[in-house]
Amino acid sequence: MRHRLHTTIPVRWSTICEHRRFPTQINSRFGNSSDALYLRRTVWCCRNSYGDQSEMEQVGVCASNSFPDVVMGDPESLEKKIAAIRAAGPQKLQVIADFDGTLTKYWINGHRGQSSHGLLQQENSKYDVKRRELAEYYHPLEFNPTIPLDEKAKLMEEWWEKTHALLIEGGLTYDAIKSSVANATIAFREGVVELFELLEEREVPVLIFSAGLADIIEEVLRQKLHRSFKNVKIVSNRMVFNLSGQLVSFKGKTIHVLNKNEHALDMAAPVHDHLGDTNGPVDDNASVKKRTSVLLLGDHIGDLRMSDGLNYETRISVGFLNHNVADSLESYRYAFDVVHLNDAPMRGVVNLVSQLCST
Image (cartoon, helix red, strand yellow):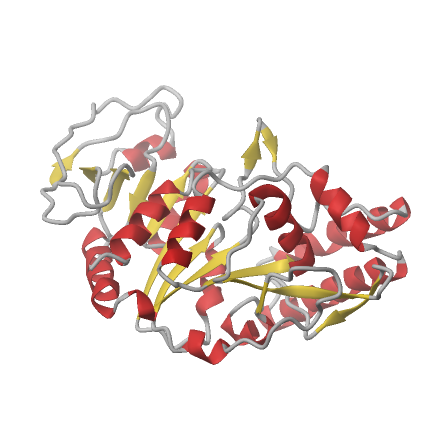
């Protein structure tokens, strides 16, 4: 049975819903296309809430100039999950978040924002060219549906290890990382700082999972947020620098796009405060595994695998559909509990966390 589409405007999560009927005419941008036919299907509309004592009404089509801000495939299931996480309490909650395109914006001033890996510029530019050539070869293989998953995982590991070797061979320095971040087109979504502050106040751990480079992510956090959060850990590929600040090796196993999940939790480490702190403080990651409520944030359906290996009881998944909304909305709303559209801010997630942590 198909789930009914549910839309909401993320103002407050706990206010009472009010009826709202949208016009039935589709905006001309869709015409009589399959997208228009899809949007003509019955939806559920709710203003300002996911449904505490909500009244819902069956309505026609949202005919705004864009898609609705938020969609949900199964509101009743989501309400049950919210209630279960609230009942368990914030001491059982953890947040797992992808970095690029999830915590960061997809579009910045009309231009595609850079990824934490893509922003890196080595002092020797020929190595930047070599890394781009690797990406041009391997990136299509990542999305090739004819390649078996186990074979594809080997190809991704091969890509990452070749890239890491070029970084070492090219003499990457930490100064180059700082300079690359300073000149990069990268920014956090509005509301990320508020989200981190709220989670830190409630002592809820945040695990940032990335197939990129932990040291670059740390530098982005430093330069763009200008503060640290004691509850934030990064699960990503971590560099080892010598005393002169030059990259000499990578620590631990390689994390790529197909294995960035809870199996890699042993790679989790707090944000380092200074260069050379390659080991960091000893941290009890076992306590994180005992947290059985999960809020997962990602911008690709594959990010749902980040919670693999974690013995959770309740998981709420929030997806960010940043572009190609018409083509991807159907698959995203079936995969995620909640989908924020069009490079949305993080404020809806802040409201959700406030509700999950309320007593």
